[in-house]
Image 1 (tube, rainbow, N blue to C red):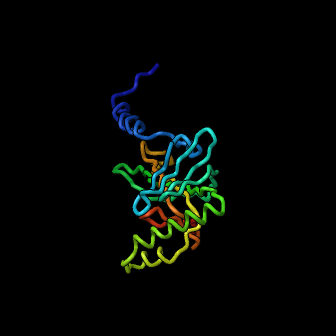
Image 2: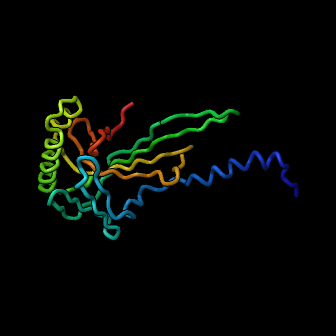
Image 3: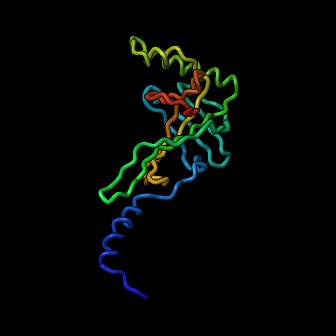
Length: 189
């Protein structure tokens, strides 16, 4: 058996070390491994409690608690963040992957929690005249859900780079708002 030359070892060492920082893609069907997904921004009180055994979600917000409900996947997409070429010409690709989900509440529960969430939006944007505040204030809440944001390197999940965000669904162009940022759940090129 041939021994590796010192040059080959020198060139392969950074590659082997770099591969330790990345994990193969984690399946998003492991959502129920989490116990809860918390809201942020103006939705800090929004909580999605996940039950692994029944694969259901309970939504709680401002005194409201839903019955256990199933999830529906709305969409997923991958966006190119940047491509980097190193000094020897090797290209690396960094991407962000999104998975959007809706909690399938009953019509009465949806109406009740949507009203409470819309009231919170009105309260938090009161006195703000920016275009985004006006848009958010004037858009109807039609549901509750969450999305998973995953940072990828060369198509693989970067270690500890998977985040869950609870939020609301708007009726305008299938938009999702997490209390800080507005996203289109259906990406059109």
